Image (cartoon, rainbow, N blue to C red):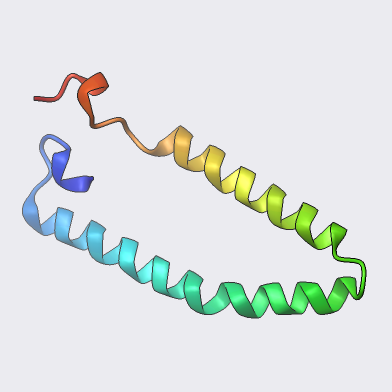
Length: 78
């Protein structure tokens, strides 16, 4: 996606892709640890855990929709 943005130099686009992969790997390492701790915290009642996870995913989804620019046919970029 960063390569479709106008005025973006190749070096900056490469840095953006590197940061995307770095944050992805960091999240893949940290998320299971935090999820396990939350499950231990809530004990045998997992409903608050699933509610908290749903809230986190909803917030992340809304942030992505808010800040990620449209680059497809609706954006008018040819």
